[in-house]
Every structure is written in structure tokens, then in C-alpha cells.
Length: 289
Image 1: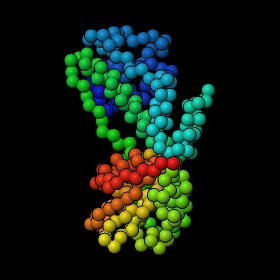
Image 2 (image 1 turned 180 degrees about the horizontal axis):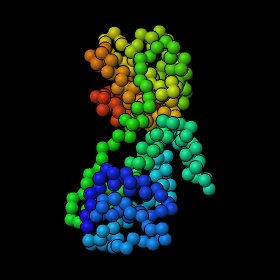
Image 3 (image 1 turned 90 degrees about the vertical axis):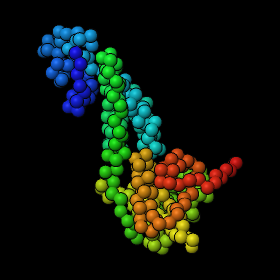
Image 4 (image 1 turned 90 degrees about the horizontal axis):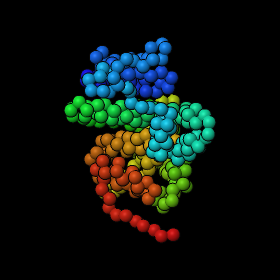
């Protein structure tokens, strides 16, 4: 017996997959979940057999949850958070609680975790259902579009730079310069006057915490030279840098001008973002020693 994977049934299955105490099955006739009876006996039906009415849910246990945490940690671009998450994963007992405790200190990254976890569980659910569809002689269903980044970015506010932002912007810029293996790609310091002339945009959390900024200056040949693009380590990997660049390039003066940016070697991964904004490399500089 076949069944459709409706949004309501999908949500119910995802919730049941994490229930480590009770077991559920899909009732194909009713299009809903059915649980064991109070005595713990299995439902009287053929699991996944031919025209069976009931289907066992995708397997999802603590080992699956741990592997998802490992993948999220590996993808985390924030060095301090990644280090803390790895330390939590290396604990013996209480690893799940330790992992959650780390993320609770970083609300934006915590939201990214839950979105990532949901995406991974939906993939497991989709693979399971596609396996059934193949048994039924039906075509596989495709993947859903990813919305993780947009969901996380909703927690950030992007606004125009003001002179009151200078101290926070300068401190972040100098910290990024000091940590970079190619500090020559950075100017020695920021200019308060140049930033005030703009254009420049700032990202802050919903609680008003300064998260990053992007600033440009116009040269004599009307080139929009992006002088700084910096995001605090704990907010990296959430799409904030790309959003800052996009907001800056949307400024009326920037829309009409050619734009350029120096990309340090340790940020080569950001080249994909630049390509999406229409940038192309002019040259690559290498140094030995």
C-alpha cells in the first residue's frame, strides 16, 4: 500500500525519529503515524512488505545525531566556536549536553545548527521515502531548496555606517589584520574620515552587537575600491560577509561604478562569493617564506 509524504506527515515523522523511547510506524491507509500499544507489542502488520499497510520509520539513533554534530563542526567557519565544539565532541559522557551548551552562548550559530540538523534529518527522510518509491515503481522525489542561510540572516540587522561605529570597526579590522598570514593585503589602519565619507555598511545582531562591516572608497578614476570587509569570528560562516558585500554594492554610487577588492590568501574560499557578485580575478600574488 502506497502513501504520500505530505508536509504534515513529514513533520510528524521528523519529530518521531528523535523519540528514543517510543517507536512509531507509518499507517499508509490513514496517512498518519501509529504507535505501539501500551503493552509494547508491535502493530499487527507486515513492515514494508509488498502491499503492507505499515512502514517502519527511518532509523535515527544517537550515533546518527553524533555524526551530524561532527559534520556541522567541520563546516563551522568560526575558529573559536569550531574549537569549542570539537572539545565538546571529544568528551566521554555528556557530549550532547556539552555541544548544546557551547551553542547556547552563540544564538545565531545555535539557529544555524538547528537549521543544519533539520536539513540532515530531512535528507534521511527523503532517502528513506525514495527507497520506498523505487519499490513501488515510482520516480524519486527531488531535494528541497536550501533556506538555511536566509533563516539565519533574519537575526542580523544591516544598516549604514555611522561615526559612532568607528571604534568597533577599527578594533575588528586591526584584529583581522593581526591574525592574517598576509597582513600586507590590509592597510595599516582605518581612517575615521574615509569611513565617514563612505559608502560603508554595518551588520549587528538583533541585540545590537557589532558583528561586521564593509567599507569602500572611490578613486580618482571612479573605481569603487572596497577597503575593508570584516566579520567577527563567532559570526563567520553564516553568510554575513556576503550579505555585507551585497548591501554595499547595492548603494546607488556603487551600482554605477566598477569595483575592486584585495583578497588575502587565507580567504580564498570567498572567491566564490565574489564570483556571484560579478567579480573576476585580475592577478594572483605568491610569496615564499
